[in-house]
Image 1 (tube, rainbow, N blue to C red):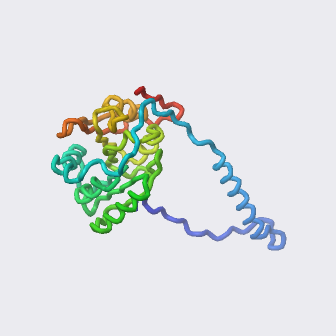
Image 2 (cartoon, helix red, strand yellow):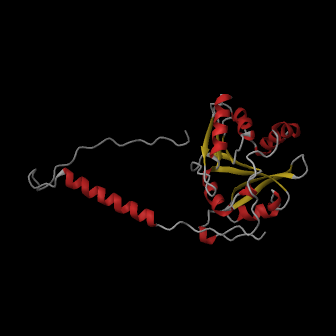
Image 3 (tube, rainbow, N blue to C red):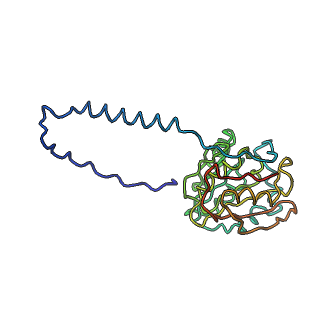
Amino acid sequence: MWTRATGINPVRPEPVDGGLTRANRPSTSLRTNGILVAILALTACREQAPEPKFPKAQRDVAPIVSDAFSTEDARDRLGEAEQVMKLAGVRPGMSVADVGAGEGYYTVRLAPVVGPTGRVLAEDIMADARDSLSDRVQRDKLDNVAVKLGAPDNPMLPRGSFDRIFLVHMYHEVQSPYAFLWHLREGLKPGGQIVVVDADRPTGRHGIPPDLLKCELGALGMAPVRFAKLEDGEAYFIAFSVARPRPAPAQIKACGG
């Protein structure tokens, strides 16, 4: 769904071997065994490659206490989703990702806005939340929505696929924010934006101060392009776009809490 199929070159006939006869030409089985040995050696090299090391968060990380931030009725009374989607400039035909989707509050509200020509990918790291949301998507017949399981430090988004990536009331729970963001930003299309909605309070109290958020995304080459306070008075909206190339993991400088 998220990647374009590539063409497959037709099989070309094997050229005539100069100077080799059928009798002294290497057998097909020997050639095949040689190829398999080369593939296994390459795989072993890849498996031995060290994992990139990222700096640790120099702040508290909030525990995950639930896959729901608040009741949907309460959020709807505040008009939260409509306000956020308007600020984010979501429109028909866009491809968007709802990372840390939980019960799918934003997923099911994004789907009709992007419409049948748009796409929504809902991601969560908890299998139970993923399965519950999959059931909801099928029950509501949201044909433009896909649901997937990600990893705590990598949402595993298809590269270069999204106009908007939403992180709503979840970023303060990310255990390895620099690794998470390093992978996350690769999911953006050119000109795409990461949209963060969070509360202006310490991370240990399930929020993150805006200046700290800007610092952490800035460490990954992202710059804020829009900021707004939401109507509940404590939550805020920030959209980020790519401002600089993605740094190597060893070059990332952690922000203080």
